[in-house]
Length: 139
Image 1 (cartoon, one colour):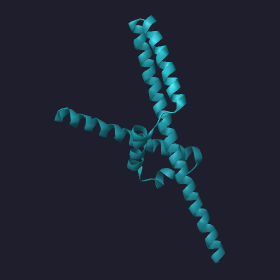
Image 2 (cartoon, one colour):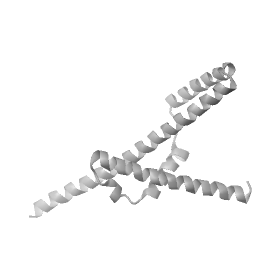
Image 3 (cartoon, one colour):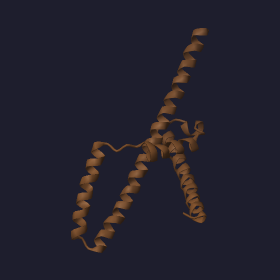
């Protein structure tokens, strides 16, 4: 891979992460609105959160038996479709799958952020409760 291609890939990756950071912030704002919290204001580690999410997806995710079975069956169906569908029909299916994948990615990202936000909110509430109890015992 030449130097220009590496730079182009890095530029694209940075652009993707910037988009994800905006999307993650939006998810936090939606979380706050839905659960009447202020998590987005407290969270400043969005770049770290992006790194954790990307590392999990790229390095740590191990497909389950259900995933592997579903993948095998999906590929069998795809093979059968490729034998019977026209080129145009296959292109439509690929486009459909592309959008299905984007929707799935969005749900996974939102679930990850909501889980993280829930953890942050529970930690915050526990600290507040602990300080209230300690202050009332002192008085």
